[in-house]
Image (cartoon, rainbow, N blue to C red):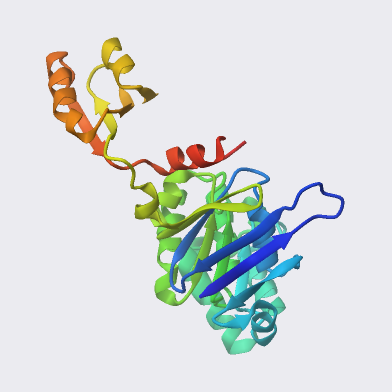
Length: 303
């Protein structure tokens, strides 16, 4: 388990702290979502975990060992896959993997074995001889991930790993990341795509202004009052029902309504039927991650 206890950090000359008493427990063998608007403090926290910054105060332990000691005992224990491409564009895929494997201290048989495993994991077999600058956006992201996995890290920090990729590559990357805990790697995952976090993360923390606003199992965080209803209809919701139920229009014929109580749901369904609106999808007592995020932070994830 990664235990973060009262961690604070302030940049020199800054009026406020980037992190202010952050406390989190990140279970071993999970994909853990870390969300926050730009400037919320998540990048600072990732930098501290990666050893690029030192906390002003607080303690961090990995499996009961202080983080600095754990990193000293096993320099490969923690790996960061940054949002920016972390490879040399003029080198081939194979050359990049050999170089970064060497940086990690891998030699001969182990180096060869880990490169083969990384290539297979990221499905880079067909492009090993190509220079990295020739790769598509999706293949570049896969190379980024492959490099991060060369040392078989116990903790992998993924910062926006699907930015700028096509839907097929995004699907592949998400499936790959979701499978990492089965191979012994705990993942901390940051993304601007809420649907990604909902798809692969078991627990989530939402941070803003350097503080943790909410943390816990995703299902528990998204559970809400049963008087909240999400609807997808085959026709537009009549204006009188929009007014009556404090409705938020979320898309084409998609609505979020507030009922006086859960007991008002049958009447709503009767009113919809009377107005000729067939229900395509209905969710009661659950909000999505974007609603939760905006309710807590009062702003969009990209603000």
